[in-house]
Amino acid sequence: MRPLDVIVIGGGLAGLMAAAVAVNRGQKVALLTYGSGSLPLASGAIDIINAQAPDIVINNLPAHHPYKKIGLKAIDAATKFFCDITAKADLPYNGRLSAQIPIVTAVGTLKYSALVPESMDASNLINKKKIYVVELKGLKDFYASMLVDNLKKYFPDKSFEVAKLDLDLLGGRDITCMDVAQLLTDNEQALADGLKKLNATEDDAIIIPPILGLEGNSSRTAIKPQLRAEIFETTCLPPSPPGIRLQRAFIKYLQKSGVRIYENSKVVRGVVEGKTVKGVVVENAVREKVFPARKIILATGGFYSGGITMRDFDKPFEPIFDVPVFFPQGEGNWSNRNLFENRPQGFAMTGIFTDENLRPIDENGAILFDNVHVVGANLGGSDFIFERSAGGVAIASAYKAATI
Image (cartoon, rainbow, N blue to C red; front, side, top):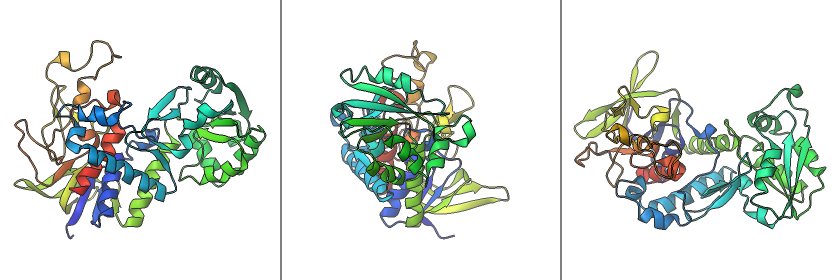
């Protein structure tokens, strides 16, 4: 097998983004995945960082933070590339690095993100007089009355109405947003007919669960012209149709662009010569197979996906290349005394430290491999959940790693 230009290990957002950027630059790319990634669990929105002025906050971050290694220029370029890819897949996103766009959550709070699917962008809610919240018969884990009660706190001057619809789905059994999105694909008219009965006007808004299909924006495109009111999707509990749409948009782009995607491919080690990784070894049922490459992008994730693991609680390790993993020392630094505090959790800072080109380094700052680049949740030095920066770090680190 001839060496590829790039091998990306991991099929989450960071891995998909890295492969997309690399192939867009004319490189021969293979994506090795083991599992489905976390996008089906995600809202579909991309958080850069929880701040009104992200550029100022990022400039003031400590030197070990991933964003400081990536740089504002690459972060901004990554957001633009991301939006370009999703637009080509008929899944338009709104936003930019400095944006803070509101989304209505499934419980009626407002969440602000930098990059938001067009179908979830609730920026225009403030200009509406009446808001309808749609409750589908049999849809579990979505409570329209609770959503209305909470949303009234943000918009006390507006009138609200819970609109109950029965689309006669699945014979009356309980259903999920995933079920509805699947059933309404190529059959959007049933929902359109139900929503038209509300007689909502241009001054109104209709809020629905995220049920507008599992691929692209075609379901929304079919329904929207039939309504005078604007229609917005909320978030939902996993599995998440917007997250699945985003995953499919990237996979579709990669397949059309010639990226070789190898599913169920567990990478067990690298083929190392000095400070160069010549390829990776994949374990399968019959025998091991070597995939040679000139550059490796490690996007296997953190604790939650097994990209970093621990046998002993204070000794985390990265299982493929065995590079050092940062972990705060001392039990008192592992977590905050109170679970919910306005500061990062120590254990969440766990990850691999890198140089400015995202190559793994040891405790003395020495580069371990010249052609391995670490991206996404593998990176150490920040609490992605506290900062609300997981999506931003994923796409920005992937963009930088693929363009080096």
